[in-house]
Image (cartoon, rainbow, N blue to C red; front, side, top):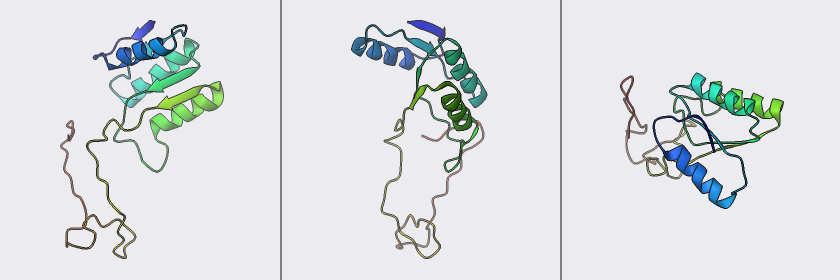
Length: 134
C-alpha cells in the first residue's frame, strides 16, 4: 500500500484494507482529499501521476453545483476523458440526514415541502460561514 498523503483520519486507509482483502494482489494508493476543492483536484492528479487506473473517492463538496459540473466534477471529467481511467465516487454518506418525500407542485414548478398543507412551503436554513449543519 502506498500512502501519498495520509490525511487526518483513518477512514480512507481502512477502506483500502477492505479492498486489499477482496483483491490482495492489487497495488493500492491513498491520497487524502485535502482541505479544499483545489487540493482535492491536485490529489487526483497525484494519483494519476503514480499510474493509478481506478480512483475511488469518499468525499462530498456541499458547495459544488447540483445540476452542472463545478470545479471538482469538471476536473474529474477531464481526467476520465484524457486518461481513460475508471473513477468511482461514493454517494450516500449523508443518507441519515436528508429529506425524502413525494414531489408536490403547488403550481410554481418548485417542490412544496409542505405538500400543500402549510403556508411555509420552503425549507430555509442558515449555516454561518465556516460551519456545517448536521
